[in-house]
Image (cartoon, rainbow, N blue to C red; front, side, top):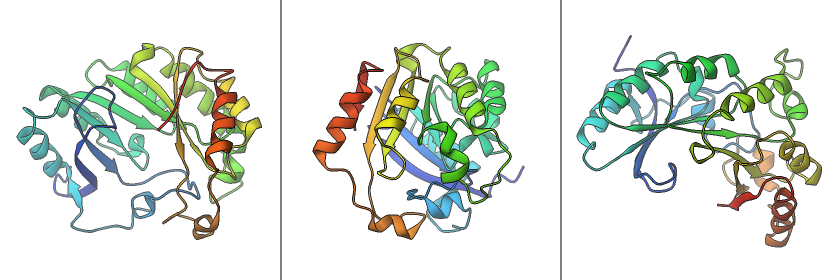
Length: 242
């Protein structure tokens, strides 16, 4: 393993990414989706090689240096489960005393289950992004519309895996992108996730999107978002707009 190879972008301190924890966040490179509204294009496309990126070695040094200040370590992406040395990254951080939160898009349930089933790598908290109705993933969220991955099956499997976590150690997240999330999509997602879940919503930001056409899409108004969130609450009680 090349410990000096750049692996992702570091947020040194965060008060919002890990519930109840002062944390540090690593956004790992590479993703298997191409969400048109994504603002992390250089990481997703694995094209950024700048001073802003850190190596595995840099990440561990930061964790060691800040372990008396920080309590949580958030591993995000891109898609974190694509990182070949994820197990080692989790193990090393846990050895330093950190609680680990893993962010995933839920399309890789076999890799997710492998991480969770190992006591040395099992996250303390897990968050899964659900972009839209899983039936629409192959047509809206990939470059190759003939993608053979069974997104609907994989998303449902990942939800069932995450459901085994205590309700206060998991959450589901959805960005309110007008082209991807309408009332019927809220309904489709709401029927899939556990009733005791935390379902976190975020406003779509039409800036620096992976698909530049999305920079011209008008976000939902406050009243439109309220209507969608109110509908979401008919499925899941613990619903919030970040």
